[in-house]
Image (tube, rainbow, N blue to C red; front, side, top):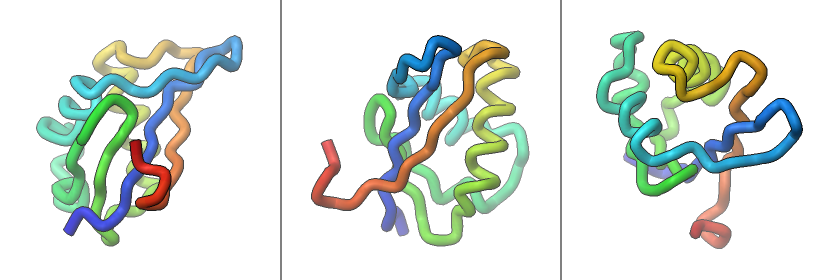
Length: 92
């Protein structure tokens, strides 16, 4: 079910890159405000790392996650998220 590994990073206004905290990823995965079943196939595995199933659309994930993070004040107005799919060989 969790066939893909995603790297989730917060990009600050100055261009600095920070992995999203595990507790923030967990908050999204466990309490997602959308009530969209497609996001049931998400599993936070560490800071900046999220395992997802094949049916999770990355564009919808990014938009929903950014919205959730802003609502929870995990993401400042001048910040955004970068989601990158990683291969098993580059997993940390």
